[in-house]
Length: 383
Ligand SMILES: [Zn+2]
Image (tube, rainbow, N blue to C red; front, side, top):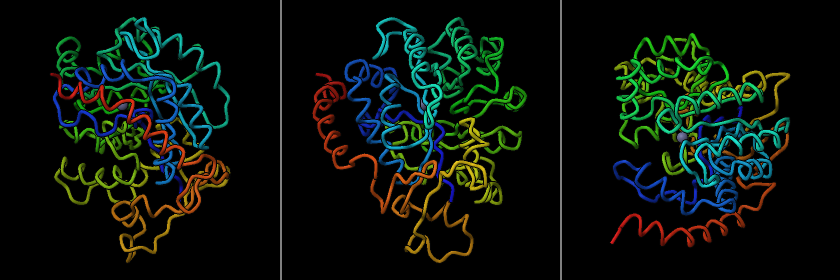
């Protein structure tokens, strides 16, 4: 079958997975301080390889990522042989890779120049969110993306305070972004898109941008269920995503694909809605479209890149099979993936990575954990 496409993640956060769970205001009170203290190029490189090992072994062949030191993410992606739409984060405050607010713009310029035209890597620019990048910052991002001919990816309509702030000023966060001329365009990959009314969905469809839907991560944060099915009905290209290892934890797409149709059925109160074939489409072709690669990957068709996986269906969690789509959506687990190919090159065989040494990656992660442990303990239990 075609490889899975993970439409949004932060692969370098693997070193922090499982830290500071189940707390209020996690991003501002825990994650930003942790990142300012601990994120280095070395952590980003090995943590990325760690996440990508989990992702490729579970059948993901392409993904979209947003983080700091994105150059290291690109190096890790090329090393393991996966396909990535990779965005350097722009933040209106100091960040791990820039002392100045908006330093990410300068980094993004260099990052794009280095990787543009690479066979596996598509560099792009990733303003963090409407509440961390201001109006003129977003105008600069738009201009930079147009000038370089790259995509923009951003968290949009994800949090309740963001929803309240922009609803009060502009009617909704999407209407606020539409007031920045040319910002809502087919160039944009919008992540989360939870707080939307019918007029926002119409606006999104009219502007022609793409969406990454993160049901597992959103549920863990206690957010309302995203109107994903309604966006698909409106013709909006929508892919599924794990979000980062700190937000969604599991980096395999099976865990997301399994709950995606279930949560939409709960949201709409309809059992027949979003049948397995349509759900699976979001994890493959929908993701390809979300990455802007709909004509190149996402399905097994003559003329497309050979990004595909071999699944061992002869296992207890998949048998018996009457409906292949249902078996993959509700039954398949990461261990069923046997081999993985990207662009015709085999990158996983019998569940092991071929181009990088997964045992070395595991031992580097143990070292990272040692480096992070005392800071994370102090942050979690301040004296
Ligand atoms: Zn995210």
